[in-house]
Length: 82
Image 1 (cartoon, rainbow, N blue to C red):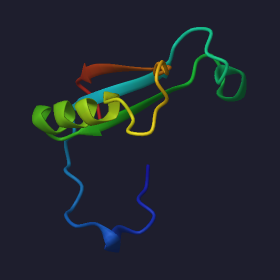
Image 2: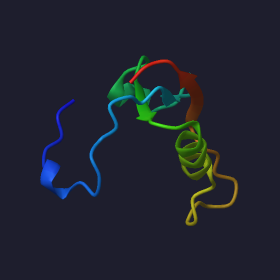
Image 3: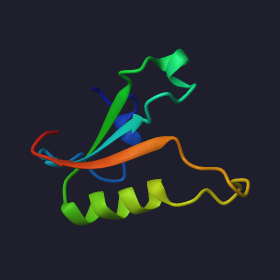
């Protein structure tokens, strides 16, 4: 995917980004009616450390979540692409 405004990047995008996070919705989540049951998004990172820090941040409980709210998103570590 092309970068819209490359001049705004702090550093060039690494040529290789083999560590990823696959994001998907849990089966039966009502949001799948909008995006489709097969919706997935993969984020790629240059290092395993970057990927692990990002997955920890992404899967953390949101500061403003209500008591009892459970995330409907599933995060999976993947390797070998990007």
